Amino acid sequence: MRIRLSDHFTYSRLLRFVLPSIVMMIFTSIYSVVDGLFVSNFVGKTPFAAVNLIFPLLMVLGALGFMVGTGGSAIVGKTLGAGEPVEANRYFSLLVYTAAAGGVLLAALGFFLVRPVAVLLGAEGEMLENCILYGRIILLALPFFILQNVFQSFFVTAEKPKLGLAVTVTAGCTNIVLDALFVAIFHWGLAGAAIATALSQTAGGLIPVFYFARKNSSLLRLGKTRFYGSVLLHTCANGSSELMSNIAASVVTTLYNFQLLRLAGEDGVAAFGVVMYISFAFAAVFIGYSVGSAPLVSFHFGAGNTGELQNLLRKSLLLMGSIGVAMALSCFLLSPSISGVFVGYDEGLLRITVHGMRIYAISFLFSGFNIFGSAFFTALNNGAASAAISFLRTLVFESGSVIILPYLWGMDGIWAATIAAELAALTITVAFLLFKRGRYQYF
Image (tube, rainbow, N blue to C red; front, side):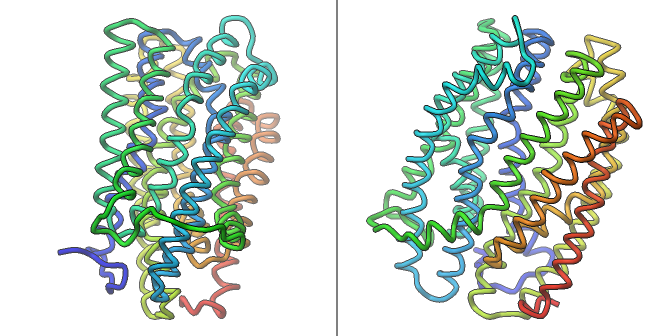
């Protein structure tokens, strides 16, 4: 039976609705994880460290897609909830076309930024050339990667989360197969890994365009539109939290890499890369749930159904807590096995990675609440509250922690920085939920 945005959601119905988005986000995280796995095992740890070093720049440039997707889907979802489908489709079309044009401009800009950014981050010699090679190939597909991120949110708003999942799984499997073919079999090295990712991102961005451009059974279709300056402005403001999250995460990752190069050299950067890959995959569950549930919040907010808002918030908070406990335990117990897949060839590097991952695992107890809290306010069209949570969580709390704690506890301070940041951010999330409850009546 088709689940509609207007339904009442039990735990079962809610989980069935958001599951495609969760799996979709997990497969999206596979891009960097699979590249790292093949590069580390078949090319070497210096190219592996280079991938991790330049990756923050690529994520900053691709963050446009997250901003337009999350901010725009909240507006489109609210418009659908208010009973205005024609306007909703015009907004949708405008946002997709704008994201595509922005992707082309950012790709051109990034092509010239790769070298100076890599140098600024401390890359030199072989690592510098590897950063440039990998980054420039990936940037060729940046417009499609941005579109894929945009459509991840809009597939849910269109009541087609399973189709969105199918597209993302197809792109993710394409990446895995091509990485195995180009790197492990053809021995194309780092370039092969970058080409595999670029081609899979191209598929992930183009397939939704073909679907939404023709007549379909969803709530949305690409078509004629006009310039809505207020919609674009509201989208940017509403999605600024997701943009800030991605930019701040990239800045913080850069700080981590800088500290790790100082304390442990290339081995530290490589170990952190593995921890980040696991973090991407685990955080994808929280992000996927937030992306999947956001259109529900937007729709019922637009429809004035406060009872269902209360139901969604109550169930979501309980799920975030339960999932966080399961993730923390899994990460702690499975860290030797997971780390061994990436760096089992180097005993010293493996030891650093396992130790770091076990400390980092504690942060999963708190991060789900903060990720969902930010997305919840975005869905309510309150970009300011959402951006404040994201900005403080990453750019302020985590940056401050990764700068200060290593001087107190050395390497352990680096691994514990995220725990401190998530705890501090949790107080902000709770404060906003309490402060805004009178306005939105969600409890």
